[in-house]
Amino acid sequence: MFDVAPTELLLVVVVALVVIGPKDLPKAMRFVGKWMGKARGMARHFRSGLDTMMREAELEELEKQWREQNEAIMREFPRIDVNTPEPTTATTKPAPADEAAGDADQTAAAKKPESAEPAETHAVPPKDGPLP
Image (cartoon, rainbow, N blue to C red; front, side, top):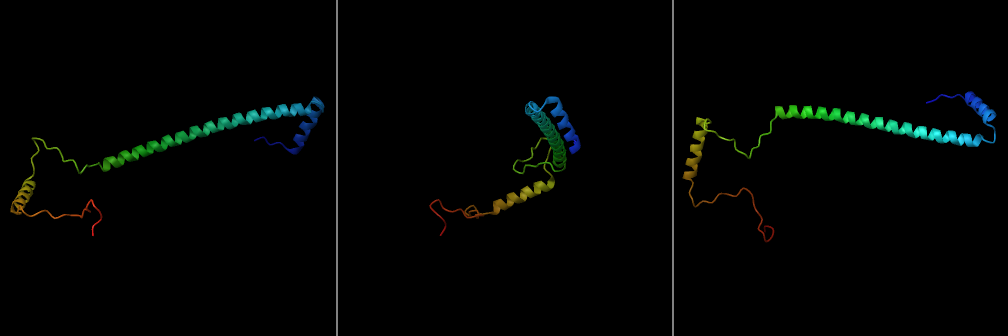
């Protein structure tokens, strides 16, 4: 911070010794040391405040970029919920291909015998224990 050469420091010590005197020099040095400590503490506090402000500004900038990218992704790939059917209105009619597919499903269901049970797609273990 301050660039003090050894000769300059020696000159300051000699002037302080002459002006203050050898008897009061330790008190003066203690006083100067306390003030230097307070000044360093204030500078450290000020610098940490500036660092915090800079970090917050960087975080805000990153959050803004993230929000913009997220919105762009959401516009490009809108979320489609597969479980909820699309609402049908009075103006919306199913396409002829959809009607034909629906008719085919109904005829296939009609041809299936009622006594036949649907095949299980996965095994469910009994409540008593594991399967043998």
